[in-house]
Length: 114
Image 1 (tube, rainbow, N blue to C red):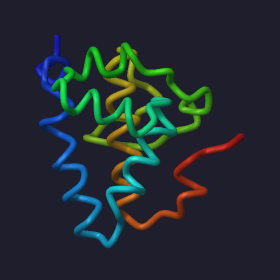
Image 2 (cartoon, one colour):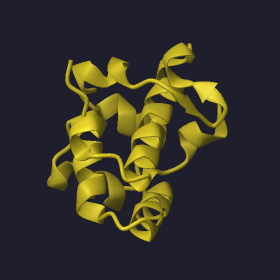
Image 3 (spheres, rainbow, N blue to C red):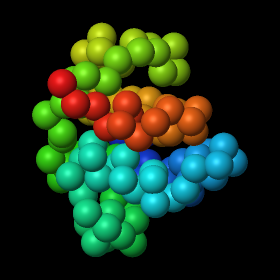
C-alpha cells in the first residue's frame, strides 16, 4: 500500500492551490478540475477537506468522470494510462490535471471530451 493512500486530501489540496496560483490560475479553476474528475460539487469538496478524508476514501466516494480514461501522458515518471493500480491511477489523473492547469493549458483541453 502506498503512503499517499492514507494521506488526507486536505493536506495536499493547499499544495495544489499554491501550484496553480503561482502560475496565474485560480483555486476556483482547480475546484472545477476536481469536480470534473470526481463529480464532487463545492459542498462535497468542502466536506472532504473538513473531514480530512484520505485519498483512498476520497476516490472511493468519487463518481469518476467517464472521460477520465482520455487523460494520458507522463506524471511522476509514469504514463498515467499504463498504471495498473486503479487508485494510484486516479491519484495520478488528478496530478496530471493539476499540472496541465498550472502549465496554462486551456480548460476546454483539460476537461476532456471525446
